[in-house]
Image (cartoon, helix red, strand yellow):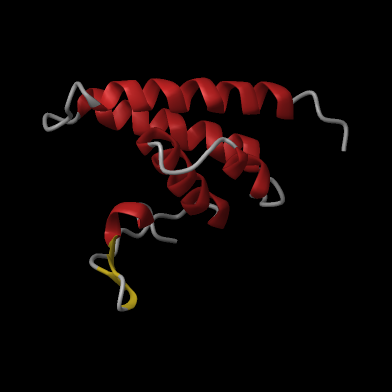
Length: 108
């Protein structure tokens, strides 16, 4: 599966999205979706409802948690990270924490 789908796609309003690179990972398919979800949460381009809409995917709460930790670690370690991105990452982390906390209490 693609390890960084949100950053590897180019969008143009007149054509289909184009894949600009291949970042192969051996992960469950739900990992890519979780990474896209947490990226967009941190960018503020989706609401927290995105986490509920994809909960049918395999091991979804765990994938969302892992994707959020991955993004936070990349931000902390990458020399090109910008301090301004931290506000969005913190907001994403709060939303993911609430989602994962609620998901572990689900009985269905």
